[in-house]
Image (tube, rainbow, N blue to C red):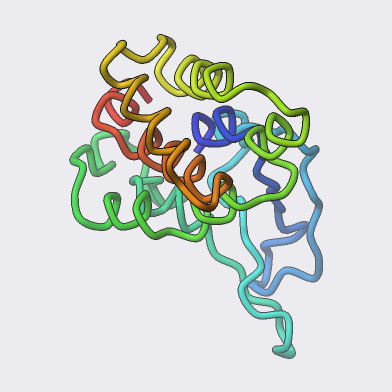
Length: 174
C-alpha cells in the first residue's frame, strides 16, 4: 500500500475509531495525510463501510486485509498469511485502491502531464519511482511507441503505470 501510494503520489487516508468499548464506535479520528501503513498505531485502523446505517460499522482496510494484515486477536506474526494468492492478485489488478490512484486528477502522472513533461521524462520518473531503475532500451522503445500511437495519451500512460505496479519486479521489491 505504501509503495503504491509513493509511486502514484496519492496518499491513503486512515481513520481510527475513538472508542472500542462496546463495539460500536461513536466517532473517528482521521490520521494525518501522509501516514504510512507501516506507521499505523494499531491494526484496528478502519474504513467507513456504511454511513447510512444507524450504527456506524467499521472494518480494517481492504487492501491491508487482502495482503494478510492480522486481526487484533492474533498474537504471533506466524499467524499471518505469507503467500501471494488470488485475492492479492485481484486486489492489485482490479482493486479500488489501485484504480482510484491511477485516475486521480492530482496523482504524479496528472501533474507531469499538466506540466507538459516530455514522454521520456515521464517514463523515467515512473520507472524510477516504481522499480528504482530506468527502463531498458527495448522497453523504453515499446512503451514510448504505445503512448505515441495511442489516441488517448492519458489512458496510455495509465496503462504503463498499471503495468509497472502489477509487474513481478514491483511486487517482489515491495
